[in-house]
Length: 251
Length: 379
Image 1 (cartoon, each protein chain N blue to C red):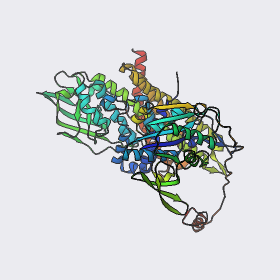
Image 2 (image 1 turned 120 degrees about the vertical axis):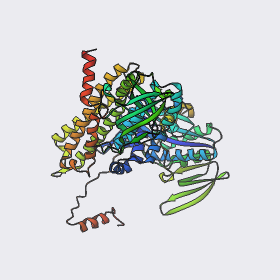
Image 3 (image 1 turned 180 degrees about the vertical axis):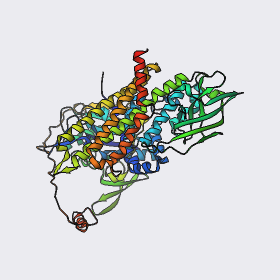
Image 4 (image 1 turned 45 degrees about the vertical axis):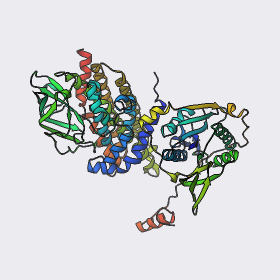
């Protein structure tokens, strides 16, 4: 089975500091988001089960060739990289066009996996947009994947329950973190990742003319958090307050 | 000169950090109280190739270099010095076989060690000697195609794990020190119960008793009577891992100090607002930053060195600086915690016990200074 995993290069969120409610991104290393790692792990598990190959497709900035080593170490066989040096942040619609075009160029693809949303702005648009551009069925919020003959049985994690659906291949799935526990690559896998095949293109080479972004981020501020400064006199009162705040039992 | 980690080293660093935080951290208290690293953890570390990191691919290693090894071991030690100690002592014994072994010896012992199925040891110290090879009393007597070894070795890491032990004994024919590869748990091999160390819990340290242990003559490591260069190698290379462990402790103490300074309040303000606390945090940060580059550099030198005497001097200097910085940095972090730092409930108290270890293990600080002075004054 030929599986594509779309992964987004984002700042390492553990190293982002907030100053005056704004994220400080200077010198923050770039990595892939946690949900993207779940999508990759799902792809590698399927490959290990039925054979085939896993291709990572990613659009990002300079340094993407280094970032993708992480995915190649964790089981991807090859990578298709789109370098977008002209834009600070790639708008979802443009990102989807780039990824869809790259996937078309890969030829026969049976399954395309996305994280449900990216780790940075979580627009949750790109998977659906790519499915539309490729004219493929799409299932979202996937927490379980079972492979049957030429089809998938997929469990969706919804707010108030679970939905099980059957989907014909090829298809696009967007997955949630409950799907699996991504593997930690070994030293040898990391050292050999750089030797795996990579195709690198610029966004202009891929699309010809890159569309002009139509959505502009005006501000990106962290919410203000104030200590509640709740005072308690007794242990019983403390338990009551914690329950009321939803930290103990059910509020 | 490029003081940056490669993209591969950054990934290895994160791999080790992720494993330590996800799998070792939840068991840290258990390791501390039971003084034993669970088998599952050792198997997990082996799956990540951490038991053969600097060893050649041809013998099952990852061939990642000693510099990358330090970067990884630091992250393991940050969570569990005992786990890191097992890898460090193992890498020392295995490295001796890699450097001085015959092709047959390497093929026989290294692949299983690199896979973590066997864990290596390095046995020099005896009850009557720490750093002086002239005082070695363990004897080796040739008996046909074998040597018969008798004696006691003290403070031996990984003595309770099956695998090869590089052991030094006095050859009774020529009176010289010879190194042997002894398979642990053969007939005549026994160990004491583990020493209850101040820190680095989980890394076993035992006395090894050798009573008429028969070792095939082909298990002589290097030339018969030429054990000293192997010992010199071990004394120097062992410090690579020791530095990584000390560095991991210091990094953990640094993070604990920063977290505590931001969370602990006095009169409604975090204590980080006070300059006395700020100066202490700066001191820890500077000690860590200086130490990490010295520890990484020693790893780089180890990748290239052929002159073990020269490397021994570099290793001695690095050990003194890193171990002392780790100790004093951790001590300052404990001071930031005030009285709470003395309580077992606070992680910093365990880190302080761990930080004491680095200065004493693998050659005490004073002995390192003697090595450095000797290389300057009497070369």
